[in-house]
Length: 289
Image 1 (cartoon, rainbow, N blue to C red):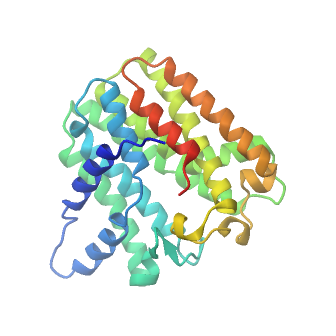
Image 2: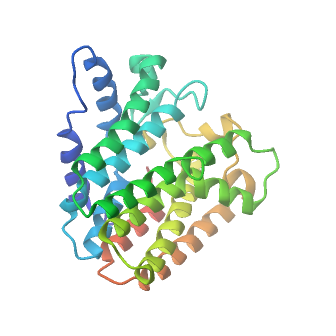
């Protein structure tokens, strides 16, 4: 499935050029931050941001600071998720996890640093009307917090043995979907899009986040370690509640197809040239890594 690799390259180039405050005595911390940030990946969240800007008729380069901040927040979450107190994983994107390469103490600080630097980056470099920039930052931080990624992670580690489909969807809508949704919604806020224009994009983004998690759960069972860049079966080892463990593999695949269809239907109602966003949705449904 076609993926907008040109947008991915723009993100990679921008991230590679970030200094991350290499100061006296903290070069080792910056090295750990860059180690995880530049480890690769499809950059789905920042690519979504650039594709949303395109759909709104803007130059994707205009939102690169915001897009990079989204990836930095995502990377911070991966560093912390991999820690022994959480998932205790040894590999991420085919490389030793940050805490394996630099130690747990430095990894924790690297994650903290990436989150702080993400906010600084948007506030310092993102062009736009100040009220719109602040609205985008508000969306980003809300997506990362208790009503988003962190809250969803808490629900995940404290979930009871028996959990229903509705609670499962809410858990993952927060844990994974909220930041993916913010990758679209924050750009709309930055652009000052009016409420009617935002409705269809918001529905698309919310459904896309759910789709991503369903496919992630499927790949954790069916994926190849080398292709995934991390050990498969991690969810089962840690007793995580997933779409596969709760509903079964076949039903999870059916739900992925349904979620993809809902995302595409919402996108069809959105104003602008949304072809690249549709490509991303198609890629997420069919991805193998």
